[in-house]
Image (cartoon, rainbow, N blue to C red; front, side, top):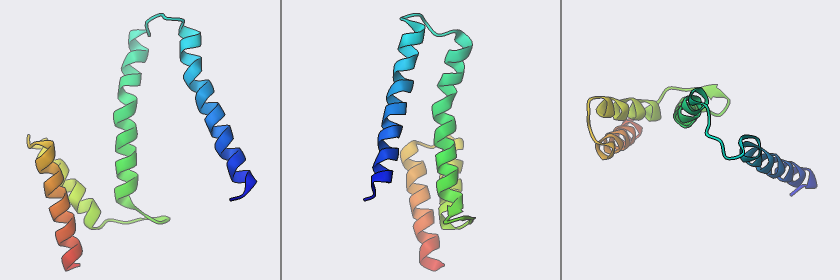
Amino acid sequence: MSSQLWIVVAGCAVVTALIKGLGPAVLGGRALPARSAGVIGLLAPALLAALVVTSVLAEGQRLAVGAKTAGVVLGGFVLVRGGSVLSGVVVAVVATAGLRAIG
């Protein structure tokens, strides 16, 4: 691998460590303000949603709607209707595999 790649990786590691250390250093054991805590609580679901959408709708450098998209939509529908996470995953997997098999 090129040394430039390893420099980027090392730089990312250093920046990540600095960012993680910045919070405790700045707050010094104080509690976060309520507004900040609320926003931080929403970051993980927003990031997960962005990753799912990117994974489901991207095919290389273009947008694509296909079997993966249909599987996620059907699995999400099961969850919205009150089904368990396991049933949502099973529906998504079966729908995706079925559509890939026929298409």
